[in-house]
Image (tube, rainbow, N blue to C red; front, side):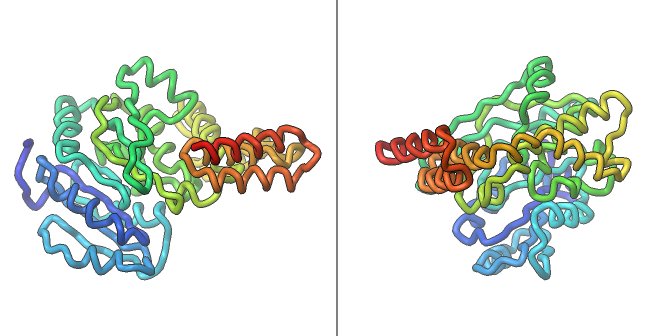
Length: 320
C-alpha cells in the first residue's frame, strides 16, 4: 500500500455509468475494496432510465464524489467533464459494467511511482460473457520494442485498464471529440505512448464484461471498423511534426483521409456486413452475426461470398 487517503489523493478514478443497474454495484465495490486506498472515485450517472443512479447514490464512502449528468451525454463528454473535477496525480477511467481485481491499483501505481519518466500502465484482462463464462484471457505485450511495433497495427492497451499521469495530457480533456465514444481511449493510449515510458502488467487484473448492449457493440459500422487507421495516421503526423490534424482543428483533412481508406465499401456494399458478422462471431453473438450476414446478402445477393458468410454463421451458431 503506497499511502493513506488524504485531501489530495494520488489517484482519481473516473466512472461514467449508463443503464448498468445489474453491474454497477459489483463495479463500485471492486474499486472501494482495492488494497491501494488513496484515491477518489468520481461518478456520473449519464441519464440512465433504470436504477443505476439510485444504486450510486446509496453509497456513503467519503472517497466518492458524485456529479450526475442532467441528460444523456455519452461517455466521451461525460469523462471529459468529470476530468475537470479530478485532484489526483494519476487518472484512470473505469467502465461501469466491469470490475477490477483488488490489487490492480497497487501494482500499477507501484510501477508508475518508480520513475517520473513512466507515464502510463495498463494490464491484462479476462473477458466474460453474460453468463460469466470466460471468453478470453488477454495477456498483453510488456516489452517496449514489441509494443512499439505492434501499436502500429492494433491497440496494445485496453482503455479501462490504463492508469496514467495527469501531467502527461496536453489539454484539459482526456478524450478527443473526433473519436466520440469510439476509439477515444485507443487514441489516448497512442498519444501517451509517444510521450514517455508506457507498459502493461502481464496479469489479468481487470475483468471485462462483454455485453451485446455495450457501447462498442451496439452497431458495427464502416467507421468503427476502420477508425484505428485514423489513430495511426495521426500518430505518424505527431511523430514527424509534433502535432496532428486534430490538434490544428483540421477535422476535414482527417475526414478526407478516412474517405480515401474506405473507398472499397462503395463498390462492395456487403463488405461492412461481412466484417460485422465476423466481429460478432468472435464474441459468440451468433444471432447478431447471422443478421449481419443476411444484410450482406440483401445488399448484394449475387455475390457468392455473402452467401458463404451466411452459411458459415448459421452452421457455427447451430453447432456451438
